[in-house]
Length: 310
Image (cartoon, rainbow, N blue to C red; front, top):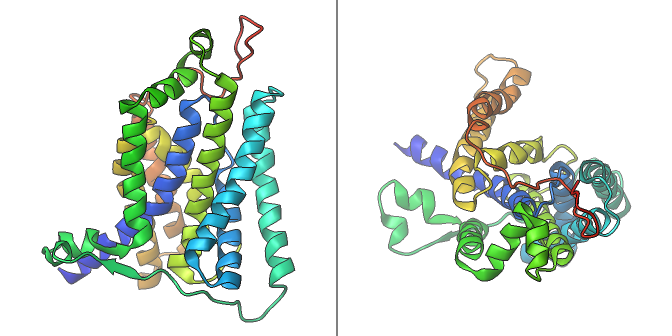
């Protein structure tokens, strides 16, 4: 039983980066901006978050710095695709590579080449009294670090914002029919830029969470493809905050299972074990794409002076 509880607890922890990055993808996508730089944003966030945490001595400040770095890149994505109407996929790939290079450069400038990488204190679990004493559920859900609680709260806030507020309805209308939204007085450009900015900030925070929980240090391969999986999770979750949270349990479970298999040394080549999350994702997405509904104008640019959108 203890092994099951430990496994489920790790799954909940592993859900955090998947949820944050996918919710960031969803938020931009709901306004029509399809960001494909998730992997780069996570690497950038991991590097910035680690370096700032190390220098300042605060993980919270490191997470805020990572969010700011991601927001800057998201602002570039939103502005170039909205004001200049450049191709979203091309700009997203450019930002992906720019984020990877920036992360590597920052680490080399601040840390340099060392035989022993520096470490930062990892996030401590915050035990919620009474609730943490519930058998099985308590240790799994109510004995986590504070970012876990904040992530689930954020997901609820996003759901409430998108489906229970006028501002959320306006944002969704921009991603479904920007010309109709524009005719109603909604500022399409501002909505798209803001959504891309906030969405990228969430992606970077998802990356910054990794060194603060898993390793206590930064390595260039720390993200390990989670950004690409987050794109699949967004489609799997139907671009809805609540379904993204549910789907994150599957993706995180496969991630933890692969890590456990590597540590256990079961005699299977680690390359094959590393493939498991991607194989499972491929199989699931073959069925998920049949019912997943994406925003109608996802990935398309809007020109209010033209009758065509693209």
